[in-house]
Amino acid sequence: MASVQLPSILRKFDLIINGKGNGGKVDEIALPKQTPIKSDYTAGGLMGSLKVPMGYEPMETSFKLTGIGDILLGAGGACALDGVRLTFKGHAKSIDTCRSVKVEMIMRGNMKDWDPGTIKKGEVNATQCSLDITYFHYLENGISILERDDLKGTYKIRGTDIYEDQRRL
Image (tube, rainbow, N blue to C red; front, side, top):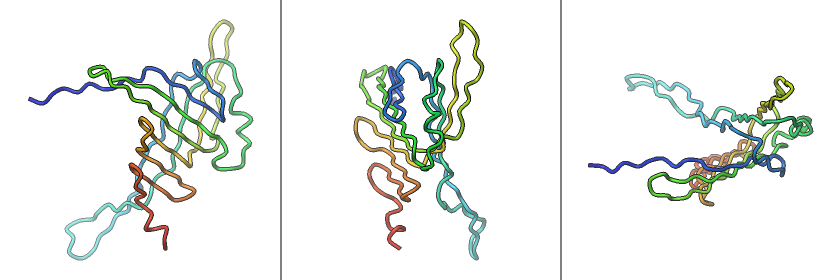
């Protein structure tokens, strides 16, 4: 019988926006999806069409900041596609083996929208922020798992750039 492996649970995290930590203000973040773009390919001898990878959909992230703040308004006017820098740092721990995992995600992008929501006396409001992401790097315990840079055309899985040969053309 196979042994049961229980998941690691995120115990603590911070989202650093343009160098400023927001511990205690960010309660959730939607991480960038990696969605391949696929085109149909059909040729003689094939029984049906094949889905051929042709790149990736644009990445985006969103997060919610509690309290009143304008942390992204100054960055909203940044003309660079990678003008806003986000760093997610977290600590997860396995609930069965007590193994610790340091998680870090580095993202660069440009503000998509800033929604301050509603505000009411005596209540903590939440500001929803969204960014279009051009760079994403995911590390576990300092080891690179995934790195994607849309501006440079790189896509690395565990340090291996799978599109390196295409850039040599």
